[in-house]
Length: 326
Image (cartoon, rainbow, N blue to C red; front, top):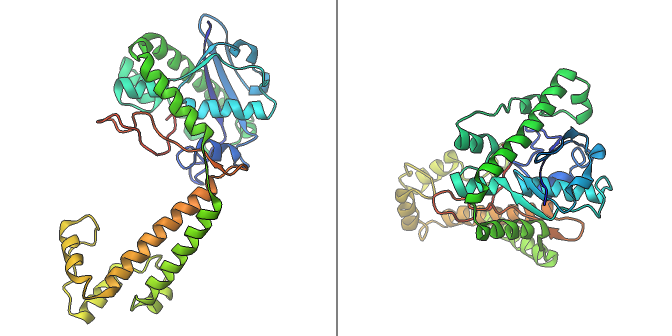
């Protein structure tokens, strides 16, 4: 069975939060500036060809039935399936198995990004400076500057060959049981979960009602509404109300601070505005979660998600957050 590494490059814009740091791969690939601008793929075949050009020129037939290694398979394989849906990769061309080298790196070194993994494996640095040149640039814009384009192509090949080297040298230390966990974790994320929109909409209505009821109990509501502040629990409002009610203003308003927890528990029964602030914050938190869920929905009412294999380094438990290959 042949062994191939694949690495994709696409449009991203850090400042506009169009990146894997802010979205799931599926959200990212649905973005209008990304969906048609996967402008480069490196295919590195073990003891075979090295290809690096636009995906519509790639020799995809070499992938069929192969072991396909991707540093961040959660992203790269989502790219692969996206290009199949677009007709760029034939639907009948599919790898035999897919492995995530980032998950291997997590298991072996507790490191998620490619540069960090390579440093841990070999004590050598990978040049990732090309990302600064690529940030905010379309594939066409990058190609228009031969110097920058050559840097991007060189870096894409370097990422692919570095991934291949790590896989060949270290994958035997990553056992089959863990590989299966990695696989099914990725499959589950890509398949996603169905969202009951009727229930979500009812919950959002309840949140709106809770927010309205909480605001009725906040004495400085009008003052806050006329200010530019986003939330009603700014210190200046709370301090002024404490003075009016003869309360000592707490040294910290960090909800995890033991002194604040004690202060609040003592005073909530006497002053309902304290409970109102907590109710307002909690209702807004839940409302924001539902808004995020809606933004993540695909056309079939399904949410794909990120659950990082061994995301918590010290315990090895999985963690729900975004990630990119670094």
